[in-house]
Length: 401
Image (cartoon, rainbow, N blue to C red; front, side, top):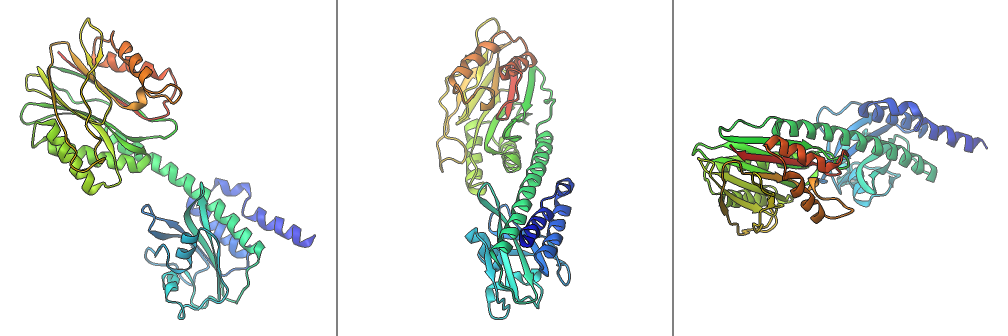
């Protein structure tokens, strides 16, 4: 009975409600301090997997002779922590010999010199390793099944807290990045009525959708809508780089297909894991022509005064990053006074329950009555049916005056 009561007390020590009120750094430190007490250990450390998944970064420690004065990184597969990360299961070293095992040199800054035994367990989130928690003792120790179970409980708690905090920070950073790159008020272009909208997704949060409007030294006007695959901070960062690169290439040529070809080469070279769709349109200096190139994106809508709106039947080329040296072509057409283009991302029209075709048909019908760019964007927002979209949504409307 005494052993059962002691086990319950030890479990409660790392799961009480008060810990949920702490920030991530304080939580990890408090968990490690309690772990030293209840497991009668002398040192402990939490290492989190970096974004590339190749190194573990020391994030919290307890019981060390002195705190590391520099960032400690352990390559995955090396040392105790690296071995736990690779195996995804507990690893116990009952006789730790720093001098006798060169691989454990990677743990040196996190393991006191006189450590005799080590136990490490993985921190898991949705079945994948996100970090490692290990403890050390100065006296030789045979770790029991209860010791491993309790340390795994601590690691699970730390893993959940870490992923929740990372998700919150990533979303906040992605929102800030989106707001800096996608201003609510589009630039003023004489003779052109422009309006935009952006709505982050309720499920995936901020992602890689973007729009852009800019005038060029040649007198042309560039118009872009795009969507980077994925969501969160990484997608937003990639989006920012692609957006900036497209602007730079647009300064060198008024040919949309040429710009997207250069952009595709940039993505292939410097964003090898990224993929994006985009439509890049260039209005002539007199705003009387528009030349478009489509990199795997949904077709723009052509809007005409007193006439039904229609989807442009232009053949899309492959998305950016999909295939090296993909061919790209332009479609050129006149733009009469009062006519305009509506560009959008798939979150506006795609629903899991019905697919994308019904959404496209409904969108064309809804946009038909809009008389201005702003009214067009307002009409488009009705397609969300007063509910938060599951995916993020970006829309851009331009009309010739």
